[in-house]
Image 1 (cartoon, rainbow, N blue to C red):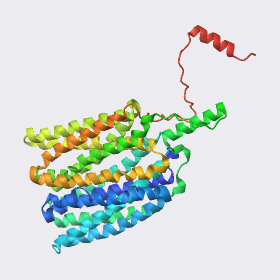
Image 2 (cartoon, rainbow, N blue to C red; image 1 turned 60 degrees about the horizontal axis):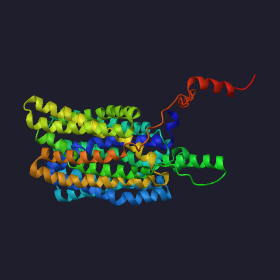
Image 3 (cartoon, one colour; image 1 turned 90 degrees about the vertical axis):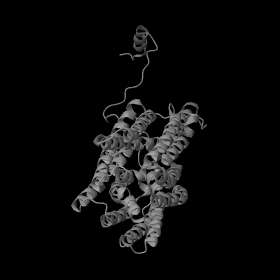
Image 4 (cartoon, one colour; image 1 turned 120 degrees about the horizontal axis):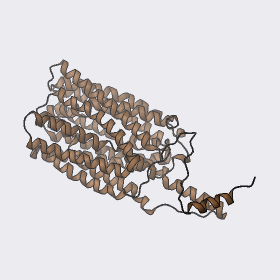
Length: 466
């Protein structure tokens, strides 16, 4: 375990935990409920979310290029400045909107602050994730990404738990002063994230052990060719289909993000408006979601070692889509207390299964992307994020016109298309290396090509004399 805990890996884990706590307090239920209650429309929720994605899109690709060229740590420090601008601006706008002063100006400030949060995400995400990949050995990244996922998800329980306690202590009602206080707490917790992002170090990354799979195979083949033929020819043993892996992963992420954006921001409002749930009840759901995601992540990683990484992702995500469809069926067909229970149970299960594949998917991407382009590929996630945020605007408009449940049906169709796209990786991605104890040498592969009698004779003939 210790060999995986290098400086940049540990720092990524700590930052993930801090982000998980801060984001869970204000970016989900609290943030969207505040905007919805002040301005009474889903459209404005979608606009602020879309600006976050647009800013991330504008900044991420240049940041990824700069990180690959000039160093990842320097770019992360620049991104931390955007957080230090966004958090105070968002806090000030929240205070002004709660007091009822300059509501339009307050909304503009919220949009500007949301854009700066998008800038910080676009600038930091690619370089930080590239440093994480550079600091973990190829073929053993699922474990590191599972830790990263858990470090973000487990603290995410605390935000809703704090909100539940706060709402229960103040009458369990959707009131602006309560939403304001929790938003301000979230802004305060964003500051340590900015400080920690200044601590990455490029010189703490690994060497050849973190190269892409195809680069390691090519280097091994070249070394073998040199040893056998004394030549320095360039042997290429790479399956030509390997080159498509990053593109398939990107296209899948984009399609799934487009579907998710229509719904993610509006689940809390669906619980609040269509299912008439109290603030503490809604936040209680979001206490259970992170824990279920962490458990499902461990299950998915273990499953990937038994049946293969791509097979595990496809199976788990298909199960998630079935749960999503079942949730809508319960909403429309079941009545009474069982309706709410069924919807909540299927929502938690669907969310856990759909999101728990992150560690396995990241390990696939980083195992097959050359080291010198990892920041750029990770920065391409901002395109998916923009698609997610852009579809949130569309989702807000659709929810206002047709209702939340019908909008969710669009998400199911888009995410199913993403699963079909991902199936192109079947038979292309290798399983990860299994870890053996230090004192145990892996048993060599043998195939009984000769009858047992001939093998005995051959072994005897090959045995050295006394």
